[in-house]
Image (tube, rainbow, N blue to C red; front, side):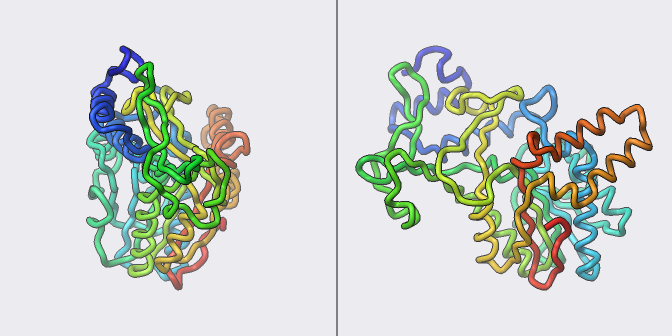
Length: 355
């Protein structure tokens, strides 16, 4: 069925090969969803020994500024109680630790709720945030009290559906096996024209449209909670502020880009977030969209440069490392432009700083 070493020798690759061999190609959405579920359940993917590094791991400044943002909007909303800090996909708990330390200095000491499915990462989070409560999804978060929610590099790992314009019309992009036994994208058989926005149906052959039903559902649920309970939310990820066509599926392994169709479950599969679509999903559920801005500009508006200077004064021997971290977080050729920050708030809540 497959040549040795082509798809990878992992259990998931074997299972996918058997499934495709018996029943035909599977959707890109299923492939990405099952691959990432396997990947995150089995390891700590962060840090130099892992596959990628997120902003909270680069510098404490990132989490501290988020904590101050949350404290500021909470104070200007009248300091409602009870109040819940909620984080989606909290990694090692580094962001939560840094954010809540800074928020506490401003008087905000919320109940802490972490949404995490990975047993490996929950173990690390307990070391950083022993006072937290863990949930598999948002349904476990209390329904009373304002919510201050953060999701950093969470939406990008949710599975996308890809639709491609074939000669005969729109079809779903699937994953099959080529003549050499490798996983490769193929075009499905079932017409999918009805799933494509009318404005795009006349697009040229080979045009690809990505949608992420899971991301839209989560943003909608958060917006519904905000409208009902009060609060604010920050979604931080790499993506674009206007809808674009084309496949953005990529794999990251050992800090390098890899073939997303090789070794499923052994690399982090991600796509660029459609923030325009996410903002529309939030507005439909009654939340206020504060804006979507570049991460670099947002952090600088919150005082990144001043915080870097203060850290340098306190630890002058670390000046070079602090400057390198500041640059990585905010410079246009690093994370500053590619990464975006989307803010949401409950009706009647103040506008958030930096938007």
